[in-house]
Image 1 (tube, rainbow, N blue to C red):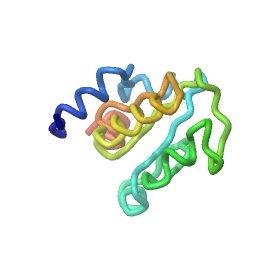
Image 2 (tube, helix red, strand yellow):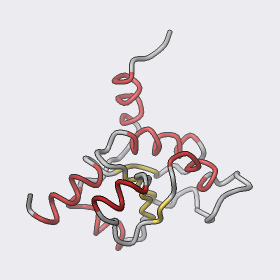
Image 3 (cartoon, rainbow, N blue to C red):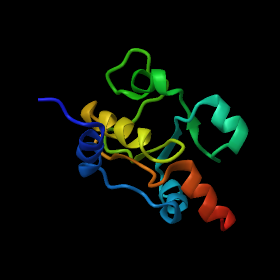
Length: 123
């Protein structure tokens, strides 16, 4: 039996302790790794996310999985990892995948970059 996209998203989010835009700075200050998976076009158009490690979505798992020979950073399995996309949908799926790969505290930002930016600018 296959899932609908909405069911897949709900299943992914059920295992995440998602972070609100208001909590993001505290999480990063406490040592969370912030990972921006937005495409370069969105980052150029909308701006960068300060202190975020930028990883293209198409190589995301290979760059962060503890078991990957192509990882770019060593991450403790208990490290808090917060994934950010533009609106908080793709990041939920990506964070759930990181959990499957052994990063137990991976999660994402509710509403993505757009929500973070709106909270920051008051829009």
